[in-house]
Image (tube, rainbow, N blue to C red; front, side):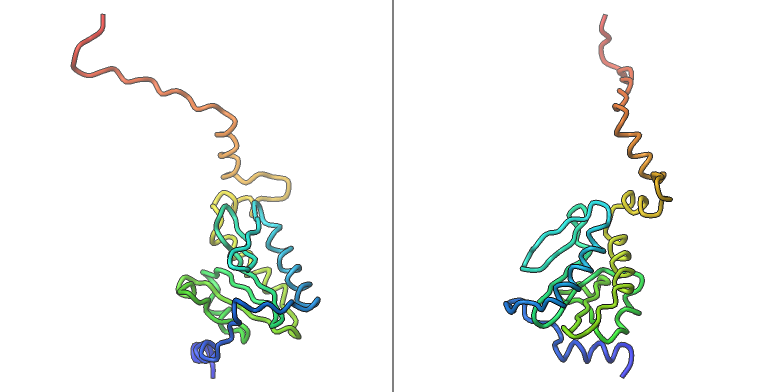
Length: 178
């Protein structure tokens, strides 16, 4: 079975694990979770939140990575607007539930004994961050080291200078003061 058929079959098998799983993750799974977290948290203005018992990495309030470690392994979801079709060809992926798959979100699940492909996940996290982060933050990623991106320069210059007062237009009609 290939392509879309295999994705449908994976969804039917119910590869998602229960949200109420309380068994602790193994040290190996926790180490993998920390490695993925380190990649994501390094992005500008990235921060963590913990809704629904999952780790969510956000930029300016928008999620770019959901992640969860449990006894059943490591699971994560990322927004992949450009590479979601090729990502879904991987045997460990499926469209994210709750209708998010229609918007390009892809979920990956790694059993405890699986090696997590950190290089691939680094690319996915980068794409996901760029998909949800403000353009000016994304511009800072593409600037050469030690240099501020042009879009960010414009923002910084605007913040440094107080706003100029607009000259009031002469009144039309009505009475004149005098």
